[in-house]
Length: 161
Image (cartoon, rainbow, N blue to C red):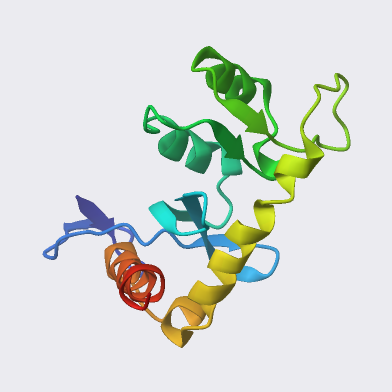
């Protein structure tokens, strides 16, 4: 890995190991996005971190690629509405319950009553953000931040019960 110096513009080798930060620029400043797969009770099963400006599709591709065989339904928000996600779920006979984007031409149906379970996922994110370290992200490196999220999630959803 090479580093370009700000003052002189010449390259010099980095002496430290480089870790990705997964912090991206959005309208509201520097942000990160946390993507999650939850079980039927709203407990996180898999978590994935991306930079703030990264599309929801990239996070969904990583998480939905290796779902367990017992998965029957997937609930997503409007940001996950794409033909590719719907077709990949249909190939595996998984019901995809994703509301339609407002500018969508074709209108595939979705089960509104099933989508009402979405509040479980929103509650999971709210419980994670009750912990100040997760809500504010003081950590510079993504692996440190994800470690904190995993510790908080395991304490809230698995150890506390």
